[in-house]
Length: 310
Ligand SMILES: [Zn+2]
Image (tube, rainbow, N blue to C red; front, side, top):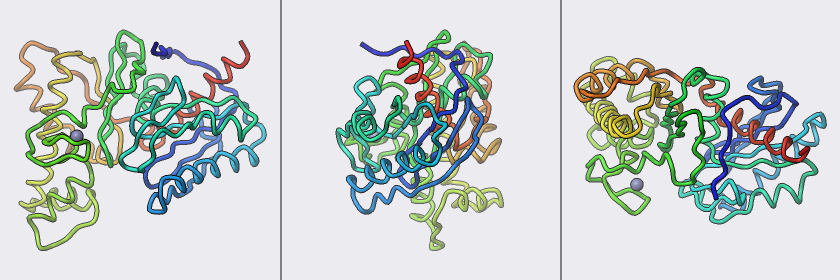
């Protein structure tokens, strides 16, 4: 049975929130959405998945040792995550499989432990404290190294481990996806895909999506093509989402969303053309940028604290 997490506010006792990503581990001492202290560790995934797990554990232990005022800890990770059983089933990005994170943390740390998915946790943080406030139906859409989303319907947050995986919607890119399929949104619209698309057509090799965006803004045709391909595919995917679930707002998070209106305006134009029956949703930037996942991890810690007291 799936756990239904409330979108409503929880508790502001100090907790530790840890967001373990493919490159870095963001760790904070939090009170609600307030970040009291924060640190960054490196995941060092190039040293293998077991090492990455050890890095997460190191971050958790150091935070607990250094901030004894914390009443609970929450951890979020990417990939396929079963929050109820506390297992990170799979991350193609980091390479780990079936890691029992909740059990590992509970045996290493004497605090209540919460565990969940990075993007869903970030979406919940935005729903409670950020850009989703006041909306009963929202979609938190995160575009970075991967693409995923978090769904709120009628004020209830969806925790289904396979929900929100819009990055694997087929947009006919014709490119093979590491998920085993082809044509997925992630093959053309993530930060690495945008860079790959640019570098494929240019003798000038770039290393990050920000550089492609900056060149696109100057009118460079190759950069514009790479950027537009990504934005068009995102617009098509979000149109599918809106057609089925009709959110009032879409909240944009993740590194690529930093493009702001250069990303949002073409999507608004696409919606104007394609959403003939539906009311187009409001498009906004995430309030907490790349710290939403860490704040969401803190919320899961608060949940665990509440359960431990009941
Ligand atoms: Zn895929």
